[in-house]
Length: 195
Length: 170
Image (tube, rainbow over the protein chains, first blue to last red):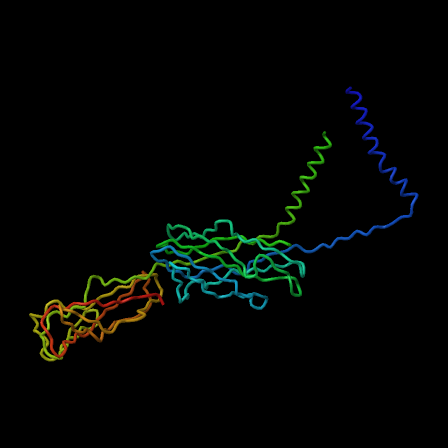
């Protein structure tokens, strides 16, 4: 029985081996046809961070609170991609200092996506991960960031003469009651990809 | 059987390659915020105190807003050096973030002082400063003075009132 299995396997291998030579024979008896093969190789999409997301100088109160960097009404292009000075909107429990002199000017994060001209791309924002801003100034609870939002939603098109698009990213920053004073900082990831 | 395993393995590799190509570049952007301590105000336990005054119709006593308050009187109101009692202005201390600007957005100018059914007025409230820059340790001091108006028919009594003062960052 074992010998028969070996023989069947051998026959199978032999048939596979014969396959190409049979095909070649058929081809030799017919007219040749050339099939076109093509590929459009595009340059990879690239993402540059231009400006940080800065909430400026905030004053906590005895109640927990939050501020929101609104970007939905922003238009960012090659001309206006310079830092956009925008005061965050208080959502209660936090005072945004009117005079921001002496601190980092508040404004949304600005990114530039570039790649193949007219191609569409998607954006992944860290909506579902916990982003923390921490300080080394004092022993303090970290600030939490959530509700990330882009001024162009989660997709865009690489337009213009060289295939690029600028976009702004905002988020909501949460402070605890009596949040300790300090300079808080942290990173958040933004990813782009061809759609 | 061995061939089958090889084919499955090849499919698995293709699957991973497809996933990898869908991933685009990620840029880690910085987010930052500066949290400063709220500005606060202390009266250091001091009060705007005119001490004893003589009930002279339409008379007045004025306490200056200098660091060492000096009280002056209109004619007849001064009870004399040995009878003046406790006299002081208010010494306020603002506390907050070093180097930050502070101010008194709405400095009061007049308050009532009451003794039972009788009311007198303290007006011309003056502040030695209504704004400035907090020092390197985040403090600033100012003093409050004012004028006690005795009115046309002053009635004897001990009068008291409250001066609401609010400070804020600029």
